[in-house]
Image: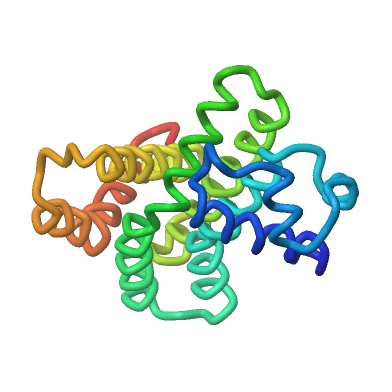
Length: 201
């Protein structure tokens, strides 16, 4: 959980992005919105990108929430599967956070090493949590295969989000939702069973 100072800055940054867009958001503007000096901002963050990353991270906490609920609340498999389905629908609707994710990913690809490291750690966390959800929902053992499926799942989610942002969906959402529903209800379970039966799984 963020401390009070960081939370105030993140909320100010989110409001500034809504008003001015990502490109129009500056440290000075964030500081003004938060009622702080630019110098005070640097007490918590060393760059605008670091602030924007926390805005993105807070907004994309659905995987973290589902993993926590499914494991700590000990929900039934069908309840977890429904949580995953609803969470993925919610993820595709997070337009502002998704745009921020790809903006920051672009900055990382341009050589921002701090962001590269943050994304590396974040994807490791996301894959860990998706794997934990699979283990809980489908009763499978952790292994290289469950982690690989979790990584592929994250890649698929990113791809669907990007298509949504670009407004280039080549398949209607009703059909992608039907496939997602099948994968969650039967597809993943069947796939994990096949993998389990293979030598050296």
